[in-house]
Image 1 (tube, rainbow, N blue to C red):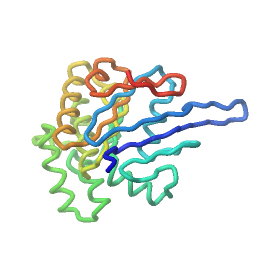
Image 2: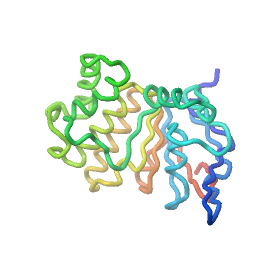
Image 3: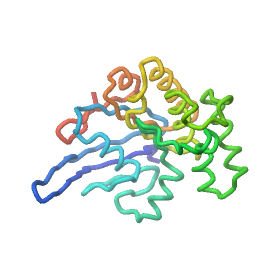
Image 4: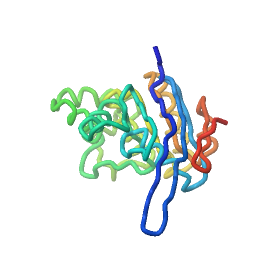
Length: 226
């Protein structure tokens, strides 16, 4: 039985405009087993975030095969992709994108509530995750009352609330000072390891990238393992 949570073959991504045709990804292959941790680095504009969006079902490849958690993303309809994003993939971005009028608890509850429609069940899932990320005393705080590091911890908790098989993190500490960044990194790596979750991190930070057990470089549209 294949235990790879990600299987990508010959992914190409082309952007067309009236002025030019840009081939951002030129045949990317990637296979990652469950529970693995991978980092992707590369120069600005090389397509790292585009690749992450394709892995998360937020974008489609121009051609190629993308199977994540057993779901063929390249051939799935929008309803199937929405279900995939709700159940299988969790996202952490450089900017937390928390709802400013919602408390930390409410922000983390929201994906679980949208999936189940059960407010109490959503709260019961959100509370222990917020405690696990060290925010048990910040549940009722809105984002403006939290530090940058605390907001990113809420974002990590939100990404994990539906027990995804895969967490995709795009520059997850790029907006934090060094001390806060290292604290958030420690948390992210520890908590996904404890859950057996597959983690893919896109970053310019070589120290962060080096913490992954598998490290890839995206350059000139192709992915190579370093």
